Length: 284
Image (cartoon, rainbow, N blue to C red; front, side, top):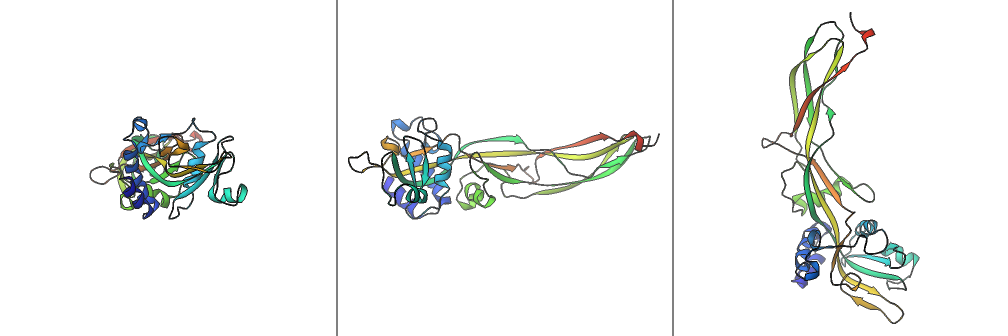
C-alpha cells in the first residue's frame, strides 16, 4: 500500500496530495506508535522538537512542490529551519547534511482537524433612517446582504482565497462535506416596515451564522538524513523515529463561510438597532 501511495503522490498536484495524505495517515496509524496520533495519523512535534515548529511547517509547505516533493533543513541544536534554497545558499552548496543540520524530503497536505459553528460579525444592512419629530413614525427599510467566504492561517502571511479553494473546495480535491456556504454565493434583499421613536434613527443589521472548518497542514517524510561525522545516515521516518507523518499543533488553516438554509438563503439573525439623535436637531 505504501508503494502505491507514494507513486500516486508523485503524479498529483498539492491539492490532490492533501487527500492522499489523509490516507497516508490511516496507513501510518496502523502502528502502535500512531494510535494516539493527530489529524490524518500525524504526530505532533510542537514542544518536542527544537525551534518554532509551527513556522517550520508553514515555511516548509509554503515552498513550490517539485516532482520529488518539498525539501527542508533543521538545525537540531538551535532549532533554526531553512528551506531548500536557503540551505544551499547559507549552509552548504550541496544538498547534504552537515553537523547540526539535518535535511529531509517529503510531501505536504492538509487534513481535517475539526469543525464548529460561530456567529459572524454583525453588519448594518440598511441605511439609517431618522425621525426628528416629536412623535413616533414608521418607515419601510430595504436591507440587503451577501454571503461571505474567507480563510485565515494561524501562522505566516495571509492565505489567498485561490489557495484556500485548493484546500476547501470539493471540486479541487477537498473532502469536506459539511453543509456550509463555501463558494456558494447567496444574497437577499428584504423590505420591512419599522417604527421609529421620536428623535431617534433606526437601521437594520444582520448577524450571519457561520461554519468553521479547520485543517492542519501535515508533512509526510520520504527521506531524512544526518551526518554526525561518521558518514551520511538516511532513514525514512521523522528524525529516525517510528513515524513518518508530522504536524505542529499550533499551525492550522481555518476556512470560514456563512451557513445556508435549506432553501439556499443565508442563515442568520436580523435585528433593528436604534440610536438617539441630538435633541438640538429634533422638533420639541
